[in-house]
Image 1 (cartoon, rainbow, N blue to C red):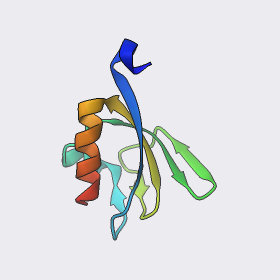
Image 2: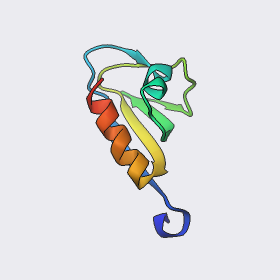
Image 3: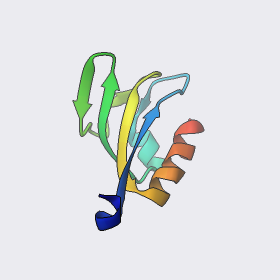
Length: 78
């Protein structure tokens, strides 16, 4: 649990108006681990830096709560 590990998870809908490589988000400061991306009925686990996120993708992020909060803000500005 979060209390034991300090880790938490967050589900975020990627709402950018364009496709973006995961690498670009990391360059903008994304620190959480992208555990999975859901796209329709497809699931992509531990996507690589070259993975192209598309509008409407659902990201499952794992990390420290403060990193998750900051990363949600980063995702909202893409």
